[in-house]
Image (cartoon, rainbow, N blue to C red):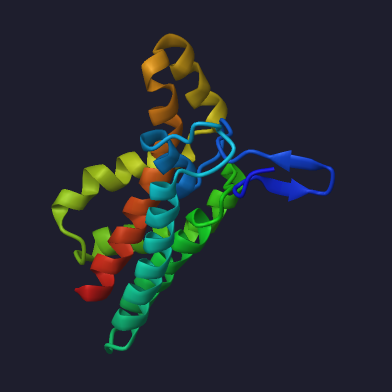
Length: 170
């Protein structure tokens, strides 16, 4: 058993599963592990840095006085971090992103997020709302786009976390 395998008693589960939406899995596409059962050292460092860095950013920003929407933006950013940080993230885990999605929508509606956020957030929401079964055929028709299509959920979630930080700072 490798260090990034998840141990469930008598069975282990590899990190690079088809419908895994974790940050470690998405980064593992850029820096693949030779045995497909452990994380590349770069992926481990980047995932840890993201988790600690975003938690620290939320802590630092939370020390500044802000309004209710700004506080919700910080909580949304922290929710994105807590959702994507584990090694395995299934589609049903993405329901935790309801808060960051609502905060980003409110930020767009109230003008706290600029107009340039509209199209990316609408596309990100669409990607998150699409059932994973709809993304799998992309790989059948365009094999080179199979993993990027599935990893789009991870990158979309990160966009909502970034929107929460921007709202908190505005």
